[in-house]
Image 1 (tube, rainbow over the protein chains, first blue to last red):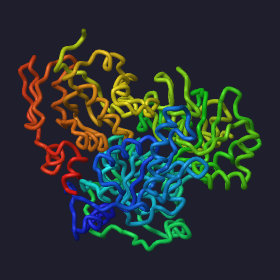
Image 2 (cartoon, chains in turn yellow, purple; image 1 turned 180 degrees about the vertical axis):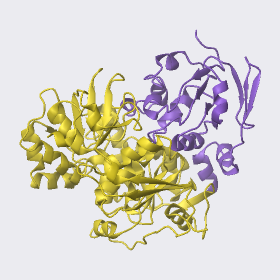
Image 3 (tube, rainbow over the protein chains, first blue to last red; image 1 turned 90 degrees about the vertical axis):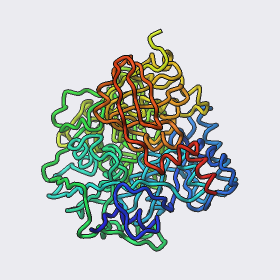
Image 4 (cartoon, one colour; image 1 turned 180 degrees about the horizontal axis):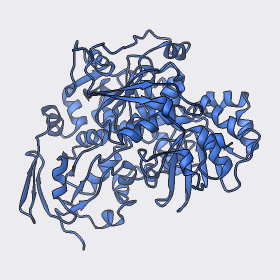
Length: 418
Length: 163
């Protein structure tokens, strides 16, 4: 029996010819990531080991993106822990305010992720990197601290679910609608302890769409979400990941635990209603839902194509008087390019606020906290109770088209209404 | 006082890391200060009234969401000796192992345990006694590798031992 992409990548990093689901392995890791929430405790765990130096200063990425620019003194103290460590250890990939972006948008963009690699991150959305044919998975700060010392981590080989994508995407349907529709089908634990491998008619999905899809594999409980390597992956990596890499394809007789077929031609713009990402409904059925805030941004949908979609909707229009629209380009490069293309002007002229890159509102950190009873439509990835502020607020998840159309109409809207 | 030691605080399915410890507190470095906010968004009584030795028992997919290790940590700091659930989200389970908080996955048997029940738990043996009902639930022991980490007192000690 052959192996899946997941099994091949883990086997190679464990120095094994063959692995099977359920096996526990120690694998070498190509990159260890942490942010301003998870890096400080990881650093304290690392220090307990007493090794002194990290295993490789160029295989650790530290990104200050959650509470940075610092929202208060406690956050400033946490960021300082990371900053001091980064300078003391001479960490190559350290990104602070002015250079940082939302980690899962930044790392692929600057070429730190390549096919066949194993990346662990102190952030659950580390699964984003599967879009580039890599194995990325989220872990806690103890794992990060241990891996910063040892360069390796323990893994249980997950069973793999094959997601066969068929048909052609209708207008206004993008990566977010694909992944929300899948989570709506299988539930927030539908891929628990499993890897999701996508296949089928993937040529219509841009690298940005794939990054969005893999980003939310964790929202189905997935350990990883992985796309095969193709011309789109190769083009995205060109000029970014300069080092040699080896694309990984599944064997023809790979043992998938199950196959799920998703007919893309039947999809429509969707929204995940509170308080779980699996509560997915067509946007067109939620037109009575009045809203107070719209967020466009995050590691899920803060890339250039996301801002382009939102800008197309708001261009020449005004944000509804009852709505605060906040746009967060995910990285400095996205911000700059969006400015040069006129998207930022479109947003500001429409009455939206545009911010420096930050994860702030996504996790209820800062820059867009909801009061009791308020509702937001957000392009982020979670709508758990209290996620974006008061425990009695509500978050509706969507792609940028629906979010921008909702901002204009003051209620949840289908983009075709604009 | 609502509870006494060894009592059960029973929750439903998909208890996520945002309610176990809301992100708005994640800039707090002190574990005891953090633990004062454990579970507060779904149960304001827990942090105030739970006593050392009380158990958290829940349905499917406990700990879904964030990789924040603060989630199992605040429960451990709050004196919870083990979390028992139908099933656990992957990262929470892993984090619980790494910090030495027993996470016992017992499937639908969890339905036998109700809010306010009293338990005696032997996590090493995988045995849960519901003392007020005279019911014993036997679970599978943890895999050997995971027992090694637990025996070492968590992942950091395990790595130290290997170096």
